[in-house]
Image (cartoon, rainbow, N blue to C red; front, top):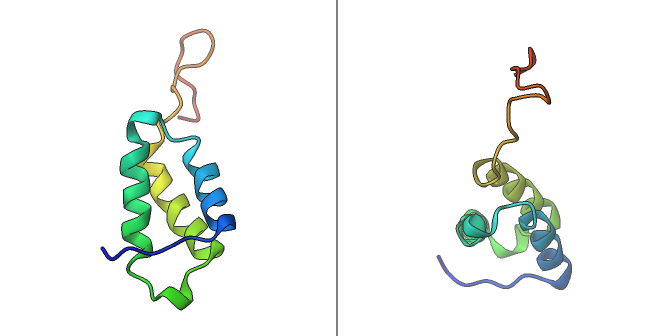
Length: 78
């Protein structure tokens, strides 16, 4: 992976997306986003591409909510 830079808006957006990732997985998430972005030419990168790639990867790093409802029964929707 070759190093690249992010604008202030891109970095702010990435940190907002990374905020919901648990702290112990955040470094791996940011590395995965950087790897995904490095596959694109520099002139194609922007907030839109960053959001699309980060949102796609976010699913793998964010803990899923519990499948039990308040009374301890499984929801019919899960």
